[in-house]
Image: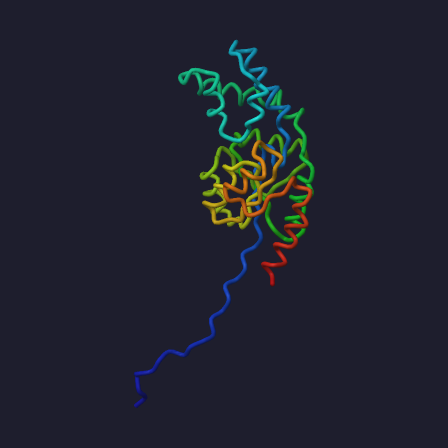
Amino acid sequence: MASTDQHPTQYPAQPSPRRPLTVGFDLDLTLVDSRPGIAAAYRALSAETGVEIDVDLVVSRIGPPLETELAHWFPADRVPAAADRYREIYPDHAIAPSTALAGARESVAAVRALGGRAIVVTAKYEPNAKLHLAHLGIEPDTVVGWLWAEAKGEALREHGAQVYVGDHTGDVRGARVAGALSVAVTTGPCDAAELRSAGADVVLEDLTGFPAWLAAFEADRAA
C-alpha cells in the first residue's frame, strides 16, 4: 500500500505576469492650458452674479475643486448654486480659448504606441473635461472626473495605473494613494521644489520629455 505521508510535488514559482501599461494624466495644466478658458468662464460668472472675482488670482492656483475656489468669493450658502451655474456656462466660454500643452498629444500617443492605456483623472466636471479633450483631438481610453488629490488614487488604483502625471502636489498625493509612480510637470502652479517635497518621483519641465522617459520606464519594466 502506498504511503500517504508524501509531500506535494514542488514546482518552481512562476513570475507574476507583468501588468499592461496604464498611465493616468491630470487635465488642467498638465494636458490642457485651460487658463484662458477658465478666466473667461469666471468673468462671465462674475458679470452674471455681480460678485467681484480676481480672475488673475483664480488662474494662478488652478487645481483644487471648483467649490474650493468659489468659497473665496461667494458666501457658503451660495457656493453650490454658483458652481452649478459655472459648469453650465463653461462650455460656451472655456473650451475654445483653451489649448493643448506642448507634448500633450505626443504623450498620450506614446502610451498607445507601447500598447498601453491612457486615462485622464481630473477634478474637473467630467462632461466639461471630455469637451476639452474632444475639441483638442486628445483621445484617452477613459476619463474620470470630479476627483481631487487622494480621491484620484482610488480611480487610478481601480484602473491599474502604474504612473500618474500631474502638475500639482495634490496629483502627487493621488499617485501615492494608488501606489503609482508620480511624474510631475512644472506647467502648473507648483514649482519643481514643491513637487519634489510632496514626493514626486520624477519632475519634468513639461510633457515634451515624457515620451522618452516613458519608453525607458517601460523598457525597465520589461527587463
